[in-house]
Length: 437
Image (cartoon, rainbow, N blue to C red; front, side, top):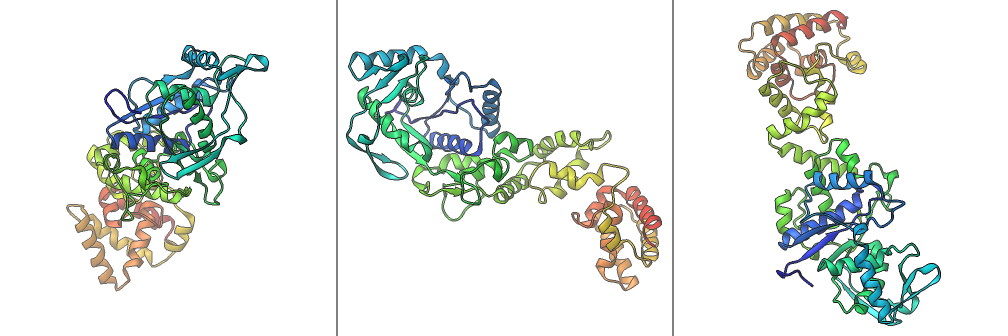
């Protein structure tokens, strides 16, 4: 089944009864990638016939999360709650043809044939079902609204859906839906059931495994294209053990024949690593734009900070962070006048009497460095190390703690350059007076 132009048409059909979680996001992504790879259409259908459980806040979050991930859909979203007249028309047809009947409470049931049927799944291959084990299917509830299986089939027919790509948990629905297609004399779409995502303990992914909704990952500062990259590789492989693939390439190379038959395990560390790789490759101006809101929230974005200085500081940390807020956590000493000193680092590296001489000489030498740039600073420090006959770490580690408050940072001489001569010397004098005893 194809649309009027003979193109592939797929759909993602979330129910607004909860936030968009990782599993559903991957289902949406696989549909979107398949449509893009085949130059087809990706339709968004909102299955909101459950009036009691459907909530506008969930709908808003689902739409925003899909947009944030870059999964754009064709045309306006379709809402099942606005299609009751269509379901009624199909119900009447089945009843007029003797294929459906009224049951207790005014509900309507569909007669399931007792045949054995085989569905050629695009991922699992042929799957056989024994319909004699199935009871007749309720298609209209007593309140007049359609059941999931009935509305799903009617909408897929009306929308010309050619392929249904969904989770393994829907396999049990397939024979029921197949019978409805047959009764309505319509060719069913091709089915592709994707194995579910598991937690690291091999159980179904849930809250106990950590954040599960896309909104939570957005709030935590993960990059959307890093998440898309990682989700694409959960159950699908591009070959050659590739792990980092840009969205534009994914759209070209995705295919269902490389989707595995076994469940993929969600690994939070691998997600973080993938996002970190994309941060590293993000254009610096775009990275500044993305990081600034977190700096404002942390009150680190001060007046007088030049765009060039901010870009240079971000460049120092872009290979060290996996989430955008980590930049603020790691670099705050660039943006505050009074830094916090890690007690363990002070005890290990600054509580040494010999630093009085080392720091005093270094302060004098640094004051003569012109211009105060990385190569000149490094030459100054290494010359002092040689004159004093000490190891490089005997100067570098204490200086790092003195000017950053931490035992870990990007390259020390780069940090000193970006802090500037005035701030570097001021912090060395402070540490010398307070801690070097």
